[in-house]
Each structure stands twice: as C-alpha cells, then as structure tokens.
Image (cartoon, rainbow, N blue to C red; front, side, top):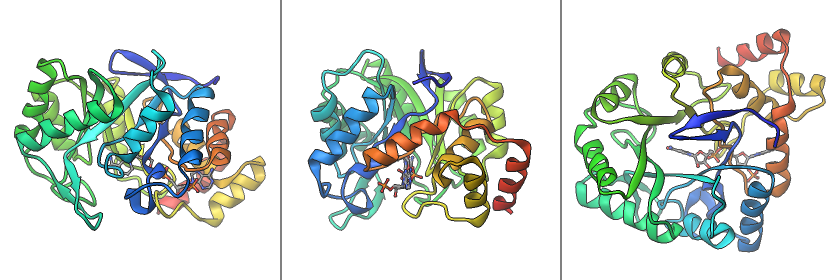
Length: 284
Ligand SMILES: NC(=O)c1ccc[n+]([C@@H]2O[C@H](COP(=O)([O-])OP(=O)(O)OC[C@H]3O[C@@H](n4cnc5c(N)ncnc54)[C@H](OP(=O)(O)O)[C@@H]3O)[C@@H](O)[C@H]2O)c1
C-alpha cells in the first residue's frame, strides 16, 4: 500500500484502514450470512497492507472479534487493532449504555478474550449519553475507569467516540487521548472545527460512517465527479476525506472483497479544486 501514514498512539498506520462492523449480521447483530466471505475480507485487508483495524466486542456481539481472531491471529506486529467499549446489545439487537465500572471492565476482558490479546492497543470510550450523536455530559467517571485499566496494563492507549468538543477537552484533562472517532463524511460535516483542533495537536480523527454507513452516500454531485475522474462515487467520498486533513484516518467498512480493493485504491485519487467546489455543495 503506497499511502501516507499518521501517528496513532505510539505507532504509525496507513491512512486507509478497515472497519469490521459490517462483517456481523444485518445491523451489526448476529452472525454473517457467509462466514468464509467475512474471513476472506479480513485476510485480504491485511494482505493489501491494512494495518489499522476498527472493531468492538459489541458487534455481533462477540462475533466480529471472533472472526478477526480466526482470520488473523497470530497478528502481524504492524497491525493496530482499535476497539471500543461503553455499549451493550439487548436480545433484540438494540444498543444500550454500559458505562458502570463493572461493565467497562467486563467489556475490556471480553475484547481481550475474543481477540486473544494480552493488552488492547487502543480502546475508545463510546459515549452513549445519546446513542445517535454527541450530547453534552461529564465523562469523568467512565474515562477514569479506563485510565485505571490502562494503569493495570490491560489497555495501551485510550480514545473517545461520539463526543463533543467539550468532552474531548475534559478527556484530555483526565488522560492522554490518542484518537477521536465521530460521525463525519461528505454530507455530515458537523465536526469541522474539532478536526482542525485535533490536527493542531497531532491527534487523529477517525470518521465513522465515512461512506454514510448502512445507507451509503448517493448524490448527483458525487456521481458527476466520479464520472469525470473515472472512479466510483465511494472512491471519491474517501479521497475527499483523505484530502480534508492529514490527521484523518479512514476505516471504511465493507463485507465485500471487491469493495475493499476499490476503497483502498481511492488513495491514488486526486481531487482538483473544481471537484472540491462541487462536493462542498453536498454539505449545504
Ligand atoms: N464509534 C461508533 O459509534 C461507530 C459507529 C458506526 C461505525 N463505526 C466504525 O466505523 C466503521 C465504518 O463505518 P460503517 O462500516 O458502518 O459505514 P461506512 O464505511 O460508511 O459504509 C459501509 C457501507 O458502505 C458499503 N460500501 C463500502 N464500500 C463500498 C464500495 N466501494 N462501493 C459501494 N458500497 C460500499 C457497505 O456495503 P458492502 O458491505 O456491500 O460493501 C456498507 O453498506 C465501522 O466498520 C465501525 O468499525 C463506529
């Protein structure tokens, strides 16, 4: 893979990684339709040079981490697996907060066991004050629990997910925050100021739903730029994120080897200023 890298914790990773959520069943719940296909996507990602894998034990639950272990363990030294804690799944797949000290510690142990690791490289605290988007409120207690687990050697680095700028500032006053993972893509740009603040501090911003998640982006502006560049709309959406700021680390999700290859190839796409002007209209 010939794309640039950015620091994540004390490692450097390629700016296109892979998000494993789509490998579980529909809605990231239950087993995949085709386990062999899911394992093939993970193996191909690493073969193509992906060294940043995003997951959680609440995908499945447990199933995505178990697929990662089956496909990739023992892990290559350069592979950074980032997981997240703070949520649980109900029997019907709905998401609920799991922020107590016991729940967070159990989640860390679930990740360690299912990924077959002795220490988790990066753990994001997934804030659940509002499951659908960042909402103000203190994160002192759950973040202090993670900092204690870090001191006990179970976690190497801590990140935050689904957070406001105030929560990032609060988090940084409690412990080192090595990444922030929030929703951001061509059509959803609420974090522009936060991205710039983090860039100034050398902290990566990892946009989740980079292609807009379960319903990928669709727009005539995007299709027009893609046609002009002889690329696909999803490649243009990823190239735009790569060009947005050097601290963006991408983790597009897919259950398809063909889409995975296409997504990684977006690294070679260059958007001209007239393309950027057209794409800017998508956010309005
Ligand atoms: N922190 C959080 O709260 C949070 C929330 C959501 C997600 N995440 C993380 O972010 C990662 C990325 O998000 P995501 O996977 O939900 O959404 P995404 O990357 O925005 O989009 C995934 C969707 O796009 C489709 N897709 C991918 N590549 C494509 C291509 N080249 N052409 C056409 N369609 C394509 C996928 O379908 P196919 O399977 O058919 O390719 C899937 O439906 C997740 O895997 C997860 O690790 C974190």
